[in-house]
Image (cartoon, rainbow, N blue to C red; front, side, top):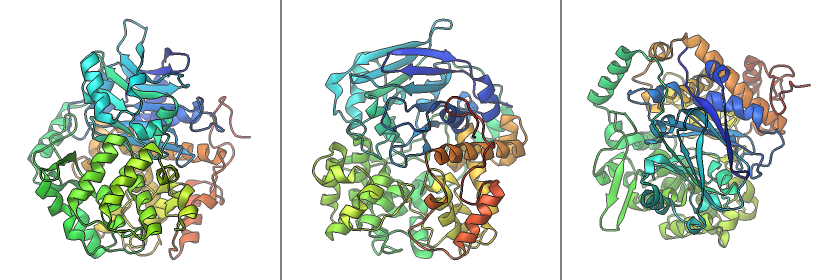
Amino acid sequence: MNHAKGDLLTIDVGAREAETTEIDDVLATFVGGRGAATKLAHDRIPFDADPFGPENRVYFSSGPLQHSQMSFTGRMNMTGLSPLTDGLCSTNAGGYLSRNFVDTGHSVVEVTGASDELLAVHVRDGDGDAPTVEFEEVPELAGAEVPDVTEAMRERHGLESEHLATVGPAGENRVRFACVMTSDSRAFGRGGLGAVLGAKNVKCLTFEGDSRASVDLPEGIQSEIHREAATTDDIMKRQGTTNGTQFINDEFGLPTRYFSEMSFEGVEGINGDAVEEKKYKKAACSMCAFACKLPTRDEERGVETEGPEFETVMAFGSNTGVDDVVDVMISNDRCDDLGMDTISAGDTVAAYLASEDEFGNAELVHETLEKIARREGIGDTLAEGVARCHDELGVENWSVKGLEFAAHDGRAIHGQGLSYAVANRGADHMYSAFLSLEYNGEVDPEGLEGKPELLIERENRQVVRDSGIFCAFSSSYVDDDAKAELLDVDFADLLAMGDRVVELERHFNNRRGFDRGDDRLPYDLPGFESALDEYYELRGWNSDGTVPAGHVAGGSGGVADD
């Protein structure tokens, strides 16, 4: 099997030490990316760790495809114990970081401990077996926004944004949905891992080198995929994920005014056409000819950003009652600069607007974002996320396992609703991407009959995607046969690997107290309980949503379950 190449680099920012460990066995079993990082996190993070404590660890990891020149491969994974969900969480980001990361010669970089001083940590390829890691104290960057950190690293070290993984003020202030930014506008978004780095007093990590390992990937299939990505006429190239906004609003459900409605009368002001009108050039991720990114600007109001994508259009558009795409662009830009996940931030602001009866007040939205990032006034409450602040606000808890909802409404597409409930990282649409089956009519959107088995296959499939690492938008261009050929393994074996990773996540969360009671939604779906039973049975889990004793060996201390 073709898998990621390179060692594990462990960086203890408290002791300011670094060491390497060979992990060929982990990579050969789990491919790379999310798979490898989940296995390492499961075995090396104590089950009782405090997400903000020095014992928590975060993992940056690449896959074998980041050693290629193929489209749809400009992505990286990040995994850790989430301060938002209190469970294991993986997220990934596009941009240009991945190639600079693999150039260091490492396949996974693990950050542990906690520093007494604010640090920039520089990872470079070393001489022989000795890793080269520099710990630079940067107290003057305390509170700096993401572009300011980029400018400082450029001036001091000649490093551009694509070399950086950066925490904004939100991460430093332990906002529970703070993200890690790279290329200034690409986010390791969900789950608050930026707050974990902030708790470790790490402002940024940089990656550069010339020691990329060689992975023997077949050339023919790479060229074919790259050519199709370059030549196809796809609306995604013009409107990104916002191309479906109008359709979803009209035919299914677009969360509106903090989930109180399922369609937005102002959708034309924030739909794909509105975003395309503000797009001023093409943009892509590393090595990708598909070029689906959305550089946008509005000269009249002086905003230039990348996006918004569909999830941000929901979170800061329909869900806050805002119908001007430029206002959404401003929210998107501020989240990037401050280092916050746009979905969780937007949903949390929407909850606040609901409590104040202020839907549609874009100025208040923007003011509130600044307060959240710096934990000022009401921002200190909102920085905890919806699950922890909804009682104080007097609104419903629209989250699962502490993670705020994505845009694809499970009240309209029931399989996606079930997916939100059982997903180990909570209400995240990318955990299974079941929504695509229901939107395209392959599966009846209503009802749950027969869906648990499909959902399991979809969850396992997304692990393959996140371990390869393939872009989610590659699905129409890189089919199962292509994935098997690229990774030189039967696709059934890849799905089996995905199954093991989902179970490792579930087991870790079980050891932290998660069970069936956490697989819940804030709304009712017909046949939900029986579908949950079927899902657990097909997974081979207990009826209470826990992994049976003996299923998973390893974990803190390498001891199997009692």
